[in-house]
Length: 170
Image (cartoon, rainbow, N blue to C red):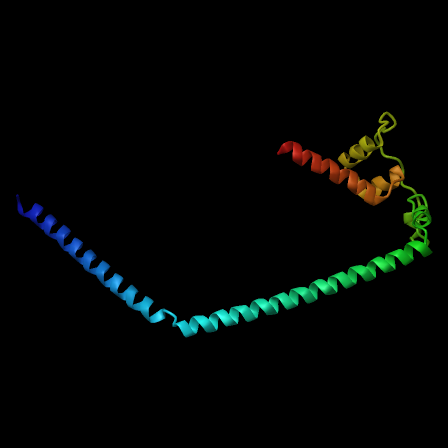
């Protein structure tokens, strides 16, 4: 063996000895830290009582919130029932159709827009007509005016198409 090999072996042995001592020191310091951080039985009892108190407070708050929500729902049901008895919903919906603009609507909104540039007469399915107009870049409100539908209905049709396309892509 030459001096180079002896030096390498000595360095390896020195590193092993240093790492072994470091591991021993880490184990003893971790054990000492763990012993100093441990809780006494009295500390554990106090912690358990505090947790039980917090849990009971949480239950009380949850019960109170549930009662408030139930009360609000009951009040809303009563108001809805009274409203349904006094105002027939079908009559309100019939007055709010797309063909009848609101009284306070500006004059430019009252005029019906010109029909689409593309010939839609060949498309018989009203849903396909909505799809086609949307593909041409018309907004939901424009399509609703052109097709005598409500904007919500047009949005629903387009959202359902998007949902169907997403489910087919997945």
